[in-house]
Image (cartoon, rainbow, N blue to C red):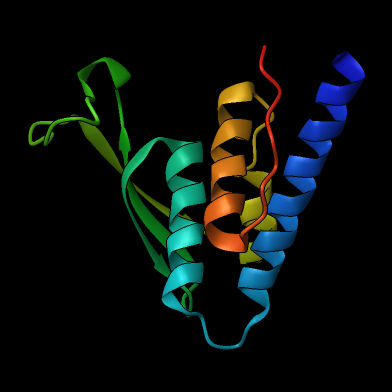
Length: 126
């Protein structure tokens, strides 16, 4: 079971890295690629809002301070956030560095793979 889980973890991360590389490779970014980039950043930084300036190599986001105040089922008007402005040298490398190996993140990446790459990576039941 551990070996199978380890292989699945590696497969999900490898396929997600491939998807990131493909989304960064095109000269003209489409809406799907931009949405993917924002999703990965939002997940990693727990950000409420993300804007990517591809020309100036900047990412602006509002990072949620406390998860207790956040409810994804309601409109959160008074959410405590910190504005963050980051620089990146290589977007592809930056996005790959945002990937995490915990079970919750792996399930998130598996859903991304189904949505963006039409790849079904089955997660084992624990």
